[in-house]
Length: 458
Image (cartoon, rainbow, N blue to C red; front, side):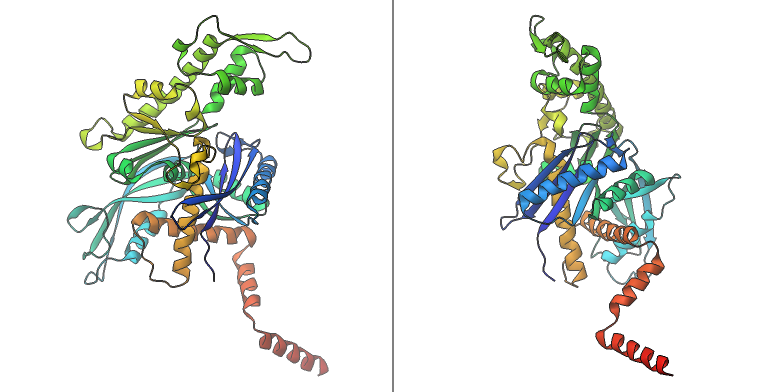
């Protein structure tokens, strides 16, 4: 079996769907081989609300990615977000009977599997189980327990939960588009892979991904994921307000926001006017840039206030939990003019715009490293890492996981491979029957036919 460092990320967003093909080159950088993008017409605030339209949008994006990369796409890793996502903290432990032997990966896997059995609210299921800190017997604050002696293994977990129907709908759309689902990752975690570095994760940083339908947050401290949240509104709320207040169509409102919009109204003068063409011969409409920036400012402030609430909910005001690296903003909404100083003003924290330059090859051209592609690039990175671990596990290699989050990724990859089988086969019996048929050798098939001929003769 040949191993190739190639993965395909599928970002199913509210405004657009992006399929990205990438591979890891000899310099350990991600080389983007192809990109496909289509307008998303069946997704609202990160949740599929029209299966048919979403399937068509996925097919369109994948076809474009295939043409630009020259590769046939069969399997993708998908990002998941939406207002149905919530997270919780959980503490769990296992008692080791063979405490004379050191703790190994099987013990950690057993503990993670135990957390996956938690009973959620009706209609919910666990998406991610992210270990934070371990405790072995009486020794606490352990980052890596593998190789240690102990009879009781305990850990704090960050558990991400979502609605079963929303998760299954995404899987259904991917399958109906003729693709296999190799993995599913929370979008802010994927974006973090693309724009954050190790120093920022260690110092403490809040990733804020402003998309079209949602604003996703992921907070890291001491290289550990500490908090995640999904705010159910993003750039589309701004566009909708411009459309309503200025009495124009959505396409014009989006263009106004991108070309002339600003999050800081103090910059524009009352005399600055932009002229919008009228509809079907009607007179052009004049719009004040001052008024436009005031509309944008109001909505951006609402989003940033919610972001600030989530950061305070994490506990940033405590000295021990202080986010020294501040905030990293990414996503299409982060390109809005003057959003960086406004964020610094509201949160009182240092802010930078997150680009993927240091993780990708050729990112200096400014197109691939654009913040709107951060989630897609992060999904490619996750897909390559998960594929690598799955390959070495299946081949019986002595490949060792570097940390517990990698161990979880392998588990999630295996889980989603099982999910694919459930999609393709209606039930367990048909799966067994198919496997049994495939396992017969040529001699066994010939022997069966020979016995049938003898029976017919009798």
